[in-house]
Amino acid sequence: MTDPEIIENRTAAYYTLGCKLNFAETSAIGKELAGHGIRRAHAGEQADICVINTCSVTELADRKCRQLIRRIHRRHPKAFIVATGCYAQLRPEAVARIEGVDLVLGNAQKTHVMQYLNRMTETPTAGAVVTSPAQEMRAFVPSCSAGDRTRHFLKVQDGCDYYCSYCTIPFARGRSRNGCIGDMVAQADRVAREGGKEIVLTGVNIGDFGKSTGETFHDLLRALDGVEGIERYRISSVEPNLITDEIIAFMAESKRFAPHFHIPLQSGSDEVLRLMRRRYDTGLFRRRIEKIKTLMPEAFIGVDIIVGARGETEACFEESCAFVGQLPVSQLHVFHYSERPGTQALKIEPAVPPDVKQQRSRRLLELSALKWKQFYESQIGQTAEALFEHTRRGNKMYGFTANYVRTEAPYRADAVNRITRVRPEAWNGDGTALTCNFID
Image 1: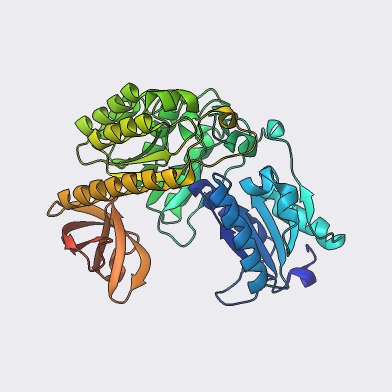
Image 2: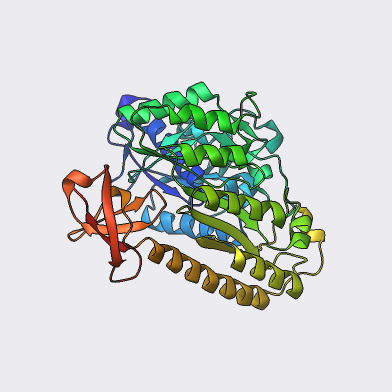
């Protein structure tokens, strides 16, 4: 496919499931193929190549990956289909057997798609598999993505050394590793020169940044804060034991780091946290939340929580509910515990029946909806700064404030990709955003 006559007018379609890190890496794949003359397929156009970046955080994620691959094969029946990502890494042979899959690449190979496409077009073998064991994943491959959004996603770290009892991510992503601060700053500077205003820092365990370079996550934040032209940074999910008081204090003083946190709790029961092999208890988690709210009362705090983990008795769940209910957090991201092959959690008893998981999930989702609504309503009438995206629906445009409140405003072309002062006034028609007026 490196022959100009072969790649002329070749098109590719890209599909991503899972985390923001996957989106950043899919963008890197797209840039690699574009550098070889393969353009992105237009909406409704038949693609010559389809790249599917998969997720495997839960059993549901696995099922969605299989469904997406089959759907893409039906939509692009003549396309060369490449499946990569965490599900492809953990279950490569199963993925290779799905009808339509031509090539399966592990996480270590996903950023070199072009070289494998070249090999496969020279010697085609349907369902070919190329992966590396997790213990051999040592290289850090940078990536930065804007996609169709105003925000950019900057990969700063990969892999995880935590080995929580329920999680397969260390087996899919390998050991914790990162790029150096100088390279991260250079990428942020490049985004600024291209007109980017907001960067989301992504990774598997980003608070562990510096493990492979002798630097620290706090050092990284301070360096990025000095990049001229970037007006706002957000930090994606960061472990509670790694979001230190020092980092929280720095973010409170920074003009560029948004008062927006995503911190995984997973359970409000210390017994369940112990069974999960988490590296903190509820006391530490509460102190982190209280520290944030003391220094940044307006901060949005999203919290991950898993229901129905093995060993979560009714008493443990009630304890977890009570703990979360008392926390001044803004939203809960609720996940069902999912049995993952090869994890230590499978040895824990008792297992929670599916119907009980459903009941517990509903309770926490109701609590989340209440907290989210209360937080949004606390922002009505407050002056804020919103970054509006390119997305337009009729005469309306949408964006997010620094503390992650979704806003709706009358469309103004001059407000796209610009930090603009607004005042939220009320809920919009479908209750998904706050309508706001521009403050000129």
